[in-house]
Amino acid sequence: MMITALDKVIIVSVVLLALLVYILFGAFVFVESAETVEIFVDGNEYAVYNLAEISGTKIIEIESANGKNTLEITKRGAKMTEASCPDKIDVKSGEITKSGQMIVCSPNRVIVKIAGKKDKRVDKVTY
Image (cartoon, rainbow, N blue to C red; front, side, top):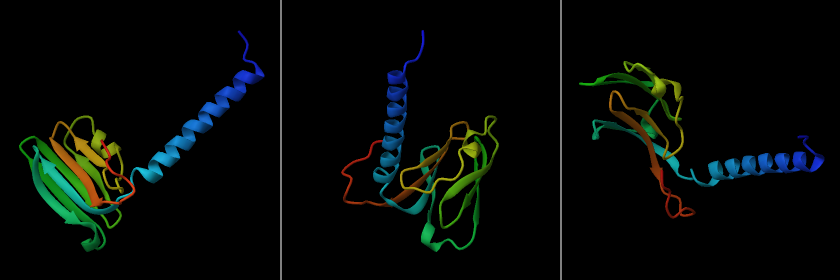
């Protein structure tokens, strides 16, 4: 079976449309400005940090009965730098900078979330 010129046009069109939707989704869904970093351990609030009050880099050691995590917070956002969990998915997830983004360490039961001020352009965002 051969790919015709029309097939190529359709494939390129679908890829470009998907790229456009991805760009627009990122621009309009995460419209809240990042204001705080919220840390939860075992479903309970562990700490809240205001990004405007952070100068330089703040290192947070999160210790629980399930393990240990190291979180780095800057004015821009937060990233997990170390974790005692075996898979290190939370460390590999990189930095979160937009409201609504999260880092989750399931084995250690740690959730780090960026929260911000609501923008009137979006009624509701479901994660």
